[in-house]
Image (cartoon, protein in one colour):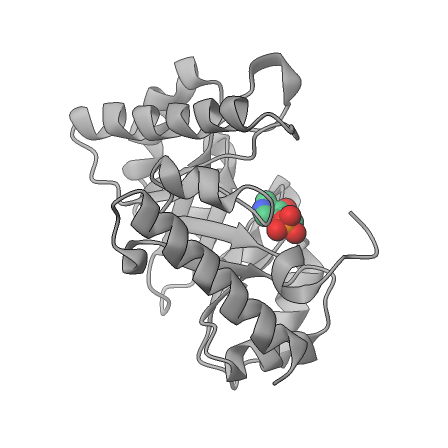
Length: 229
Ligand SMILES: *Cc1c(COP(=O)(O)O)cnc(C)c1O
């Protein structure tokens, strides 16, 4: 067994244990394998071990990997920061985008989504950490953005995503994840149909699952340490 497949087994076991502890069906949590900075062969090894969804942070690197691995029946998620001059490549290469935090980016992705592809599945990134984080829409500005994104023709708004500030404080991280869940519930109360909470990484996926994560984004625990952050 390669280390990637052993790591995947261990991460899937962590997910299942955390789900059971929270009284949830382990199948309600999907694993997104974050392959940023890792070579295409690592993605191949993970796919051979049964992993279906992969996350990339850098537009050109991600699009190159998608192109090099066209023969694999896997799903590609863009999870990094996205500038408006890079939206076309993302709209043409990826199945999901997790980090929407401005209407302008969403409008460009919708306009540029190839007609022959299914709608791009998107999550809005929320700043759940207040002053301590710069990316993501502020909770107070979420509802108008979500309603506008949901109305775009070539996007399908699936839910919310967050990256809390780094912290050793499990209670604080749980409150951050819990806030994202409450914000999703509020939006559903306004009539939006959402099924996704994208939250939790290698170090804190158990806390995120306890608060309702449906997608955990895990890199290091599967592929090992990265050379650049
Ligand atoms: C890199 C990254 C991850 C994975 O982080 P690990 O700590 O390596 O599991 C998850 N989400 C986002 C947005 C990332 O940039």
